[in-house]
Image (cartoon, rainbow, N blue to C red; front, side, top):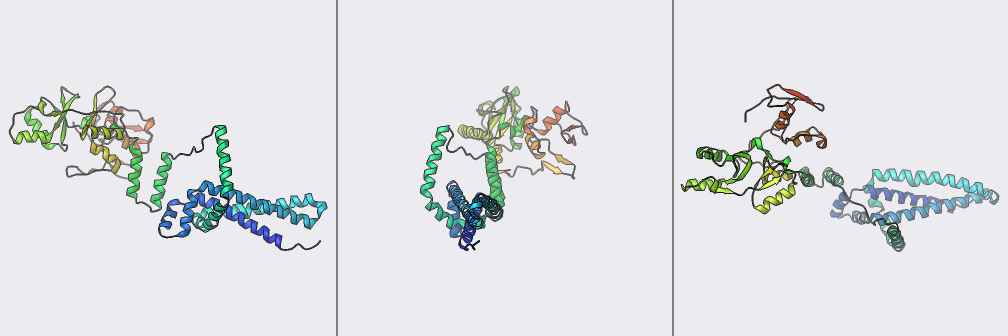
Length: 409
């Protein structure tokens, strides 16, 4: 048996190296953080720029990688078969081919697939930038072939009725992206929270952010003038809803600037004569639509109604904007803790909070919650079948809810 020259063995080693390169590149560009590449690119890294360009054309890069990987694997296996037949002789060619196939399968699987892919996933950024120059060159060389294959694939897709691109970004994907860029330090926590609030904003309804009717400041149109003045002086809003006979019959808003102007100039007027036309929004209206309606009607306040037209509460432009940017404080606001943790098992909660905030705090499912009330206090009254006494309690899910203090309205 004649000794084989080293050339074929070195060539197999070269093929295995290329196989490892292609496999590592495939995983590296699938796992690399695009925002990190962009930051490095902005800092002047040429390799990061190339890697970023490849990332933007990942489908094209993947086709190049797969073609290259298959070619070198076929080349390595074919060469190994030739070497085996040379060593064992033509009469044992089938056995030689089997031995070569087994050996090359193990070598390619271990050193051409598993090991490089594990390392590339762990060090995706480094692998992506290291492989970028050669991969960019290979993509340029293979462009005509990939283009032909791409046209063929699109033609087959049209034949079978599949869309060319059915990919879409879900809301969950966007939340993940915002959390990732925050973790990477690309944006701060405040901006990340603002972006996430903007996503959730379109799903929030008017009833979730109202001041409920039990907490509304409103006036009867026939109210005593002294009472009107007292309420006007104490109001934190520039407008006060005015009703006739029942709070379910809101007939207008009293604009306090106009009211005080009449008092200063000692003009004779009736409350009804000062009323501005009220704006009504249904409880199910989404906040973007509610905001647009307030802007269209050039007002900062609206009455939110239920399915029967009754008054559920009042909503202001400030309430809506707070869903986007968080709490907006002014001099008239009192700083209060909605959830005050007493100890590990006890939390003191303001009964005026939205029932939706309560459910979110305890990570309870809104869809499975059934109540006509929009505040925690209203729901507690419903659960206890009437206005409760201090100490009244009930069980809900894994929570024990007890009334700590009551007040008269």
